[in-house]
Image 1 (cartoon, rainbow, N blue to C red):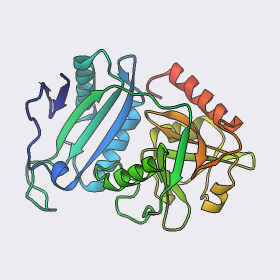
Image 2 (tube, rainbow, N blue to C red; image 1 turned 135 degrees about the vertical axis):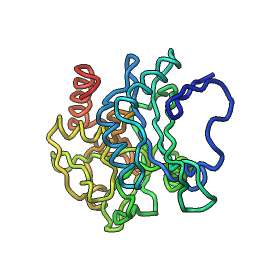
Image 3 (tube, one colour; image 1 turned 45 degrees about the horizontal axis):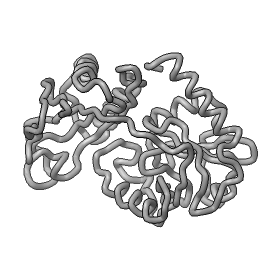
Image 4 (cartoon, rainbow, N blue to C red; image 1 turned 45 degrees about the vertical axis):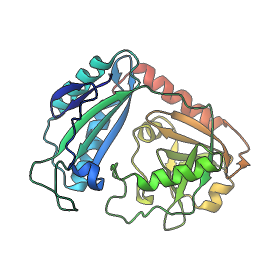
Length: 275
């Protein structure tokens, strides 16, 4: 039975630990991070904690724990659940509150849980869903627990036999996947949508940008349709080439740019667990 870390304490077994009036449960008022666990440590934890705070700040949530306290919690919950730990999730919610949008006065809930990493196929079939991301939303670019839109989009992709759904934004440009960032090979150059397109500042996205010659620029859906190659990135899938878009095979999978990015990221991960 898995053990969770909740507001500074470890809880084992099936006993309920989260308040039934928690705003994360009631209205999706929360933020989270998912990190890959490698050799018993959370990969890129410094970056994940920094993004967690940025997302919390964006929702007006004041984290009640210091980074050192969060690091101690991460180590404790990973250690308590070994072996078989492949991913870590840190969730911060608005805490117990009324049955509505207003927050209560008890302050945020912080919970950490672990699980197996699972496996991703060597390449991904993707579909572009008909619902755009709103890059003007006040929560655009924040990693919030309000994932219903992603759940619906991914279910749509699954029905089409695909493994990921991609969103355009209101401007008609490529944005992101339900749990991934997108990189596109166009005319020999590697391009990824800028944060102004409404996409999440993915940890793996940032590391790929830092280790390869990536250009951040808006990618029209017409340009995406003529891509030579493309790949997805996320904290659990690393670099995953895209094989088909809406059933159309890309010319290269993986292409040379995708392979180079995957090799550079793998080399970085082998060098350090906290880049």
